[in-house]
Image (cartoon, rainbow, N blue to C red; front, side, top):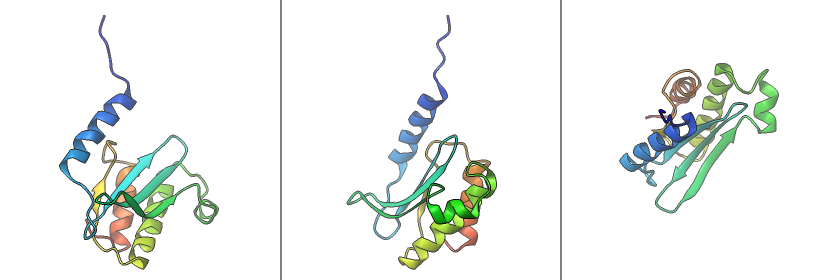
Length: 122
């Protein structure tokens, strides 16, 4: 019998490999993205002190009000612009993109592209 790892376990293992390669610093914090079946979450984190500098998700009232659905590519793109605007207000211009072990396509790519267009550099 062949044992097959679950997708969640594979993603967590990929995420640990990614996190070993880079960390967020005060000069260049980490933009961490998490995607569930119903929502998306984005945080900008300074790993040296373990502090979340900026956070946004599709659960927030003002973000949710602008969206028809919270789990599609359009919602991810809108969340990317929201997180970028909040980061620029705090004076954060460059970040390290942490895709959280998810494949860089679809919603994860849409969020990254929208954040780049809104002014974040990574």
